[in-house]
Length: 573
Image (cartoon, rainbow, N blue to C red; front, side, top):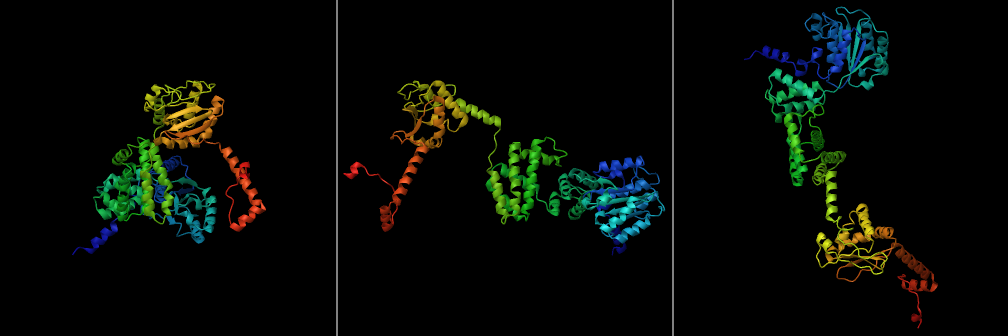
């Protein structure tokens, strides 16, 4: 039977990693170089303040630095920039048995009576050390009366007494207290700094752990080194000394990074059917969809980051193998495309949060990304436009698809003129006659290029039309049966075309549209004329209804006036 006392001794001697690897000197503090340097210089130059205020998030080293400062000030070899941790005073502070070193919790000692007792005790000189150091953690928890009682002590500080206040909620500390302290802000630690420290601990503890697992733990700690050490302790308890990536993901509740990569590949590749399969896998694993969506946003941010910046060190903690995978995924995309993906994802975040059907919303949002068209570079678009101009025969005729005119604007008989060269360039059959407005050559050139500039979608219709000719101040467009739908564009832009022709030629033109092999379509009348006819008809109808005889007939037959026809001489006979 094993000795129970030995087991109890082993349990009592175990220290969690956060306590075992708590820094004991300034050189061991992680990620707070500015604070450490300032305090060390103050000690060297003997510029010690009577009160310090350390603020920052949890687990970034506020009380740890306060304890190191207390040792540096009271070290038997000091005051020194680094405590020796060997003398009696340094060891007494490490073991919390120095009577001149007091560390209290503001939440447990927040009343005015507690502060009064503390104030009375500091009136006496330190008994064993150079300075009496009082650390009040979470000082913002003190009551208003307690702060007022402490204020007098800070205004007239006792000799050789130093107050160090620590808080995670700086905004709750009264301004009167802040103004009497030297304020140091402890920054949030980067994931890279945390991962490097965890790697050091793993080496000391004999752990086998991948850089990916360390990255997951560092990111889950969210800037807190103490939280990261606690999580590493938890992972070791679950996985043992050989930490597997899947074990880390499971204990932390994070989503497998490969799932994010598969989703991004499906989106970029336009594989909408894969989205449904991956979503089913996501739901079956029991992951929270909103948590996944936020992770996907971060994943696309990383894709954009590595696309824009060759070496993103300092902006994102990405191990070399993950960095390579991200670059491979986004290789076919331009930064503008990734930015559009990221923007659409961000816009949908609030919608997913409040959706009654989050799975359906998620699938619809991701499939929308699958169908998102790629952006073309401006240089490529300009090149295509230049090719289009060349294809339309800009260097052959004033307007691609129809030949140069043979008649002057002053001629009475204006007709279509064939041009075999242009017919070959446009690829139209030789039997089709292309027409052209009977305008001066410079005017025709200007007419076409004005169309290209103002309405580029309209200009190619001059090439599509079987015939474009001018007769009696009327521009007539003829379309083959299979291309007659282009006539809609002519109708929609008739006012523009007439205005442009009049502006360039000095004459007023009307428009006509014909189907090839059919009778000419009726002339397109100006909207103003049709409105006048319609207004006159309505006026005549109102007059007819006002006639007593007509009204009697309408009432008896329960009818209405459809049209009014004026009586002519032939009707009278």
